[in-house]
Image 1 (cartoon, protein in one colour):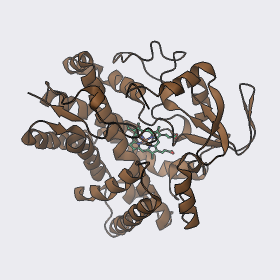
Image 2 (image 1 turned 120 degrees about the vertical axis):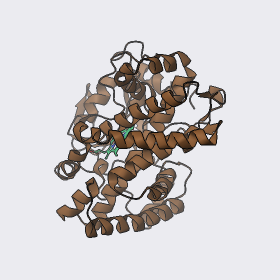
Image 3 (image 1 turned 90 degrees about the vertical axis):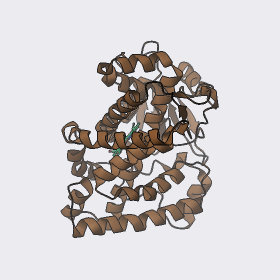
Image 4 (image 1 turned 30 degrees about the horizontal axis):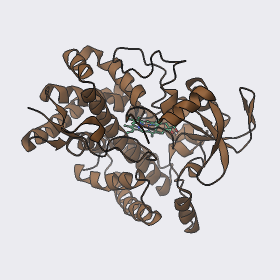
Length: 392
Ligand code: HEM
């Protein structure tokens, strides 16, 4: 459990100081490795001798994995970039990158601004106090995703339900299965609709190429819906939370939006909302790191949170400093699997924070910071469950 909701658990940070590469017993009982500092984290993520294939299972709840395996349901979905290696990964990623470049994403600026303002209209109409996640962070990022993927805004309930269950470590295999089934049916409908009536969006692009099976297409869509909204919503909510808990930083940023670029990188570094679970690789051959032998087939997990607070890489790492140079942080990964949606996430953050600060300059937490209820430590994305705010 974290003493400070914005910092990695102390026990993990202590490992970094003591021995940054050490054995890790995964929940299914098998023995692998854990990396807690920046230099080793970076080198594992950029080393092609490590594979992401079949690497997600060992860190999940072993009972859940066993229940899914008994049903013959492969927990690794096809079409999922994060579980693929080259050359399949390269080909599938290339099909999508054009829609996620800075140039392409900046064309969406006006759309994102419009969505942000309309969410804020609703927040204002509701009056304080509100849960900023349910009323702003979640709808903003989901509605932008709907626009980007060319699906009606009501469709957000389909992917929100699935990602909520996926990010809840307490969810059972049955709940997971039911949400997956509902989602697969939904996505099949989306793919059919794109086939019949293609739009100007990444899913239509891929459907039109006729290179992927329907299962692979469903996987691509699942990954974009799944990776695209809870991440950005949580990053936005956590950013507002930490800025309100450090009021001076909130005032500093709202009086000078020219520091937004560095502020966003620093908020990504400082908060690192993807702490551990998905960032696991498997050695494709024997690999020696710092005189330590990682044997073929062994798994290695990178703790992004402690890597981003490594004093060897960042001066005064535990201090939030919106004007520092945080480049090289690992909050969006590194190497070939580095976040596909990173430019979109940054733009949504910049627009989302600025619109909020301009509309509600007096925004404040409606509860004490330590009373903000956080997600379970084992959640794939770490952040507040709800963020009660108020204004005058
Ligand atoms: C602040 C928000 C976000 C954070 C913190 C984040 C974080 C990450 C991280 C850490 C990875 C790499 C994981 C690994 O190497 O194991 C990743 C990959 C990925 N992200 Fe994001 N992400 C965010 C937003 C988005 C958005 C908006 C989208 C799409 C709309 C997206 C799509 C993806 C995809 C498709 C991958 C897999 C890339 C690959 O395997 O080649 N993410 N993200």
